[in-house]
Image (cartoon, rainbow, N blue to C red; front, side, top):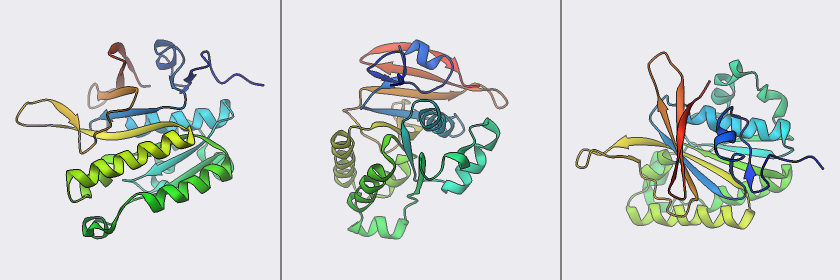
Length: 223
């Protein structure tokens, strides 16, 4: 059987430098939160994580898109050479989860229906990896903090039950009072690791700083 990575407890991302510095990639069967500003490379990181798993690790994946349409994401990734259209269907699934603001704010929305559909899709393609991209978009539309906590715990329980290696991306915003950047509307206290994307310059490459169990890992460039 083909090994999935250099460390049995890690899931390789295929991103040069990151897997080496983290001892093999992201924690297998756990969820990692990736935060950063607009244009910092969160969606690129997440897509490569899934593409690498599908092509090189025999780990099929699901991409849940809360902000952009799946078609637009696939088109935007064309230049990276991952040949996503070849993976769609049997190895990789994109789910359009862009929320209807009126429906979400009505108070009738929850993640239960979507998670039920994702359970079926996970079984259908044998998924081992999953990405929830721009989770903050959906959570920001919920009416209050209690509703946001409820859905976050619902998602966390679902991920644990299915044993998937998960990646959640969220936009990082700066709060005026304390001047500290925090992921908008996202409160995920149980994730084992957090990644922060940064854009080095308008025309340069982005980078990532990783933190797990209080240990800081140096930044590296996304190329």
